[in-house]
Image (cartoon, rainbow, N blue to C red):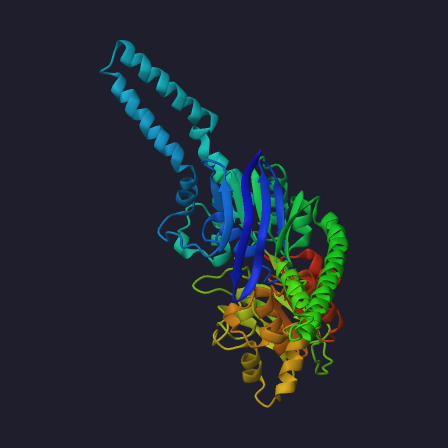
Length: 514
């Protein structure tokens, strides 16, 4: 049974067609992965389905009384609530039923006969709803889900205003799962989860009997939870049966077929246009030219095949040979309180270190402390005097979001010629209009490519990368992994993706909460 029908969906963004007259049916109980290249329109599609964005054209029919839940990681939470109070809000509808039920019980004291029987029947139905929902044991239900996502590690009595961004994200995801919506929309749900919590989420979603749509750059996660794939490409929305790996096989065949069809159509359009241009001015052939013009006007022109521009990264290395590139002794990191137990580790000039752990535990705080962006709370660390680290931060912030990628790069390297800037951006896949659009209009993956382009012109002997893959598509992620593998210097890599870290790092530091 379908719960969502999309007909003729058309939407433009930044003078570009994301979807054109696209159709899609979502059935009850389907587990769907939404895929597409950076900027293809995945998040826009989810927002349209959620009703948070109005499409330019087309019809979206939602089943009657369909309850839709959306993981909005930018939502504002009441900072004064405790964690448990916020999670308890997932069951507010049951609280309302309970209030009505208690009112009926009070009313029964003054009723008799048919009126009393009516109240007893009605209250019995409400009581059954509460019993079926285990209303009187809600805390156990809440903790079963929230513990799986690590909420217990920062405490149910914690005030939301004191939580980190990663902790708030876990909290919002926990509540969304507890609400058991008919259709749940998840946009990058694993971005703030560590490995053990991703594993828990995979098992939970595989046992979920309702419908969900999920966007994720973590292809391992997507392959595990999605039994159907919805692909957004070439201005169309297409549905594929099977998991992500099975989709890739089907997509390759269809992409080649689409490219061939597009090229054939373009050749036909050129042929017609050439004939019209040659013959429209001659009286003897004007009629035939007009006939060809009508044929040309009737052609529904195919969208140009979507291209994920190839990219490559190459991080310039400054030679340094030392057993003591970085020495950390009993380092205490945090803001108003220490987040991680005292930290000690030793890196040489070839050490590749994977920093892993629960999101919100303090991995980024550790990195920022080492880079002197925030002060330490105690202990010590010392870099080799010739150490020159290159840093990519997790947040996609730019000092001037209205500047173009071209100007952001030029600001970093003011002596670069126009040709050099264009070449550097093209190397990471920022070609044509992408180079001159405001960075605020770029996708997350395109912003990260810009940051990496700057790093590719910044010599270093140590890379410090904080969740660099969060926004990258498959092609860019593979190119980044290759560049890191070829890099001769040291590495501190913060990532929640084991598949990315494995094969790159030879040492692991587990960040655990104090």
